[in-house]
Amino acid sequence: MPYVNIKITREGATAEQKAALIQGVTQLLVDVLGKNPQTTMVVIDEVETDNWGIGGESVTLRRRRDSV
Image (cartoon, rainbow, N blue to C red):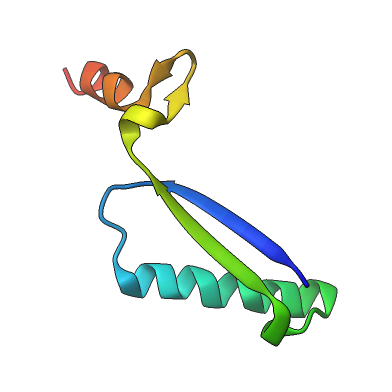
């Protein structure tokens, strides 16, 4: 029973994009590992950019700095 957790920043991924991720990851597990798609779980967590850090700073601050 595969379990895949995808974490992305909350920036407007559409329902269609998320559905494509779920379908694509499920199919990848079927194709590569021969897993049963009926028992494959895919969870997408959307994280606010204030709660996602890279290099010691939040994504929000990093993007604000880089946009100047």
